[in-house]
Amino acid sequence: MKRQEKKLQHLRELYQALPEPETGLPAVKQEYRLEMSDGFRLRTVFWRPSGMNAFPVVVTRSCYPEQEAEFEVHAQGFAARGFGFVLQWCRGIHGSEGDWEPNTHERQDGLDTMHWLAERPEVTSIGYWGNSYLASTGWCMADAVPDKVKSMYLGVYGTDRYTSVYQDGLFRQDIFTWWSMINAGVPVTADYLESCRYRPQIGVDEALWGVRLNWYRDWISNTDRDCEYWSRQGFWRMMQEIPGRLKIPVFIREGWYDHHLGSAVLTWDRLSEQSRACSVFQIGPERHFEDFVLQGQQTEQVKDDRVSSPYFWFAKTLRDGEKPERCCRFYVIGADRWMAMEDLPRSGGRSAVLHLDARQTEHNTGQLRAGAEAEGEVSYIYDPADPVPSHGAESCFKQIREIGSLYQPECGYRKDVVSFVSGVYEKPLCILGSMEVRLFVSSDAEDTAFTAKIMEVFADGRCVNIRGSITTLAYRNGSAVRQTYEPGRVEEICIVMWPIAWQTHPGSRIRVDISSSDFPQYAAHSNYPGVWSLQEKTKPALQTVYTGDRYDSRVILPLYEKE
Image 1 (cartoon, rainbow, N blue to C red):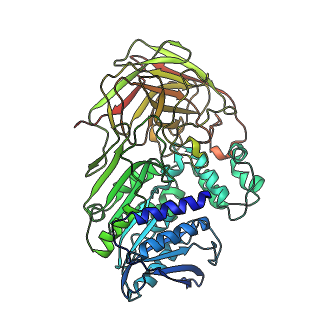
Image 2: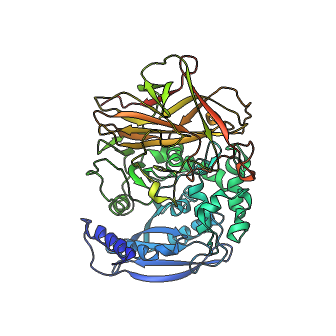
Image 3: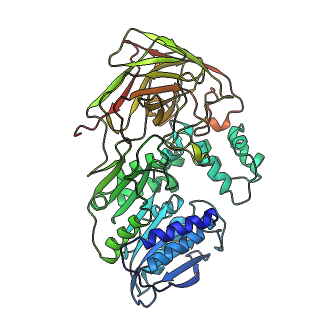
């Protein structure tokens, strides 16, 4: 059986496993060339439940033609249980008129479609369902939908686009360069990694892809969070503001190793009180693709709810007319259990602080201690022409094999990676929230990058990544605009991780790796100042990490206090 057919069969089995009764009748399917307010017509497919004159409807809007067969399974599954299902193709996609340009027309096209449905007498209520870009097409209209729209179920996406695209000025290249290549509107045959390495990146579209993508150029040239493109006007400013205007319940579904997690957390925080009072935020162990890889862990409590969760959400909010209770539900890796709270866990409570000790560093390995010791330092050369390969990541897309919590190389595996390892923890640590790595560093470059990866070393010596992140001297400590740096000056920088729920095993140790690249998860820093996509050349840089009383480089682990 081919891979696609196996996937479709699995979806059918998930619907068959639902306890809700089926009508046993196939859906009545009809296609429309639905006219938008500016005259363009979009291919819209409407599945109706057989024998019903009035029913709730679930809607999705897509730009991915390869998923058409999956939508047919979803539509039949919902229709068999008394729901209508509507699939609309975005402009320029799979039979819809117009030119494909991501995001530009989605709000108005979505609202036109929702109002068309709301005016139909057989439609009793409407819900919107989508993952990734399909969630974006829901979020972008969520604050202005007609009254018949009662809820949304939006997965693996967030409305703070800068957080999804950049981390302290470094572009999440494995996601957005690859996404741009496969959504360019024309076939792109260029080598992916050659495209990532191309300099200056601003010209890669015309040079290697054969098409000019102004929207990609906008993404890679606007590196300040506090700039007009991301934060002051236009589509992305609107997206930031929409959660605060929301009136309906929303189920936000995320994964610990999804590249939109950071943005989704900000989206939850920005929800209006009216919406958040009846919304749900669920974070599982998944990657962006609704699967997961947690090497060395038990996962018996992880169930495939990609069908049951949205179905019961819409049964409650559309068919039964009920309002859900506010809840944050998340999976604890290592403990193999789920927790539920009213809100997301925050840092600022009890923490474990581990201090880096670079004295007597051997084979690029130092120690993590309970207190700051005498001063020490360790240096390495970072060469952008030979970056550290991404392995165990949350911000990848093309490099799917590298996403998740994976077994890591032993200490000393590269000269440009410095490791620090703690003593043994006989009792488990329950880490809940955003971990931080605070470093005192210097460089002989005017700008450069520093990475940190926090890991658990099991009692048998195997090691897996928990979280990793990156920062630059230009955007150090969360700066929204580019700063200058004087080469050789010691600076304190803070590398902030996305939140995590993780319980270590008895007898484990904590390890942190410090380096300056994580490619292609992030673009390799050139070691020159300025906008990364305009850099034409690179150079090696001498990086130094300082430890001790005066330069107290440290790891901060937020702990769950009610264990």
